[in-house]
Each structure stands twice: as C-alpha cells, then as structure tokens.
Length: 79
Image (tube, rainbow, N blue to C red; front, top):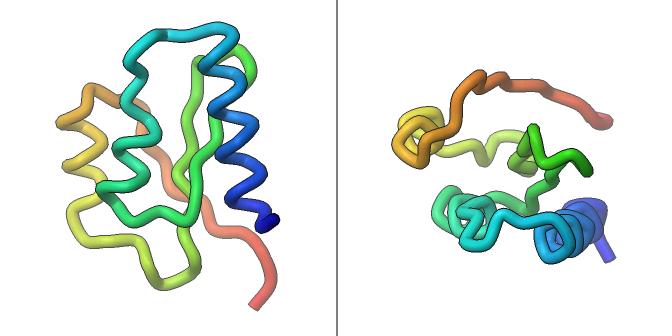
C-alpha cells in the first residue's frame, strides 16, 4: 500500500481506539482530495497528505470551517 494509505489506516485505528466519535478528519480528506491523512497517537494533531501540486486553493478555509486551528503547511519527499 502507499504511504498515504498506510497513514490513513493508522489514523482510522487510532480514532477507533481513542475517539472522538464522529471525528471529521476522513471526511475532510475526501472533500479536499487528499491522498491520505494522519493523526497523532495522542489525537492532538492532524495531517492531510497531498501529492505535490494537488493542494486545492481554499484548503485552509475548509480546515478552519471544520474547527481546526494552528494550521501549518509542510513540504517533504523527493522531487
């Protein structure tokens, strides 16, 4: 599986074990067209994983509308 798929599965398992019930992370990832998502094992941080060049305009507004704060953008990987 891809790294994004693996991270998403790990996040799903973390949410299943620790909650919160109804967490919007997977839905936000789908809405934004993310390749995947990740969540800290403490649940305090979320990450949305995008293929380079696919981050949609307005993504920050979608995250803020969902109640997320402290939004940061990082770039990684090989080019």
